[in-house]
Image (tube, rainbow, N blue to C red; front, side, top):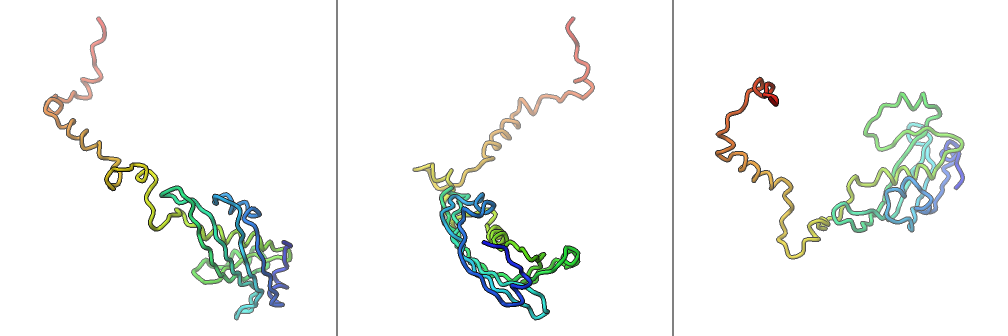
Length: 187
């Protein structure tokens, strides 16, 4: 896909729609279990109420992730619509306060990479830990016939605590630090 002049794109209210292969998005693809899908997009140029050039970007995709619980494929339905506005210089961008505004400021150019913006937005929508809502962790699922109790990684510590409290250990006098340093050497 060609690069666009975002300022002209916004001023004329231009539109661009299409689809991009997941395989053409290597940064996004690094988080996916398959690259056989497509990201559908629709981008409309606009000038907002404050006179800033911008775009409204809509993205639709089904992203194949791996569930962190069961390690099976999890299809994330992506349906995003965002507004962006453009500034001409990095100095302008640097003075814009970071806030919770629904639109985001970007450094515009006459050769703006729209595919990179689409890929960035898809990456930002990925969950930190993708999980099915109703799956069982793989370690638990592999223990067929056992009760459905979660593993207790510190259960062995109770036995250690009991052995440490045994009378022969508790009754032994602790050596002073000085006594530990002055051990008699061999004859």
